[in-house]
Figure (cartoon, one colour):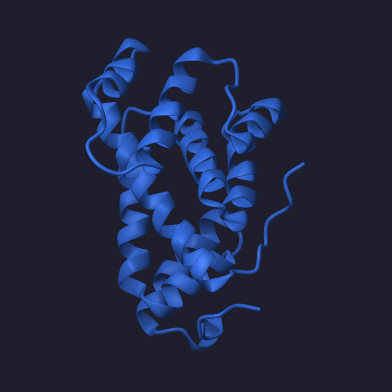
Length: 178
């Protein structure tokens, strides 16, 4: 049972209707997490979707973005996003063994992407200034300053949805990962 008073989709603010239409067109449904965010704060959902579009147009691959989203969601204990990004990660080309490793916080065997995920997990799970060595390790793996910034955006976006889902206890409407 959710904790926030999320109105039914038909009772959501008018500002959310267009956003829900776009989501439904792209995904075939409005997932519960997007429903909660959009019904309670259409501006927050609009900003999130806009930032997702910008991230998708950046220089990180879909599989790199999904690897970061999945690993950070698992670290944050968000069962909703773990299920969602396991499915989306599979669609982005991540193999079942890679998905399992990312959920467990373990390397996947792709050294470059593993360096990016390790960096993301460190940033998401720590406080204070990130050491120069941590940043250099991402550069040494072949990532650019632009890609580091895009990774930080991916962390910020997934952390927001993780927080909403953890506070709301959003009902998972994605398959349970194997």
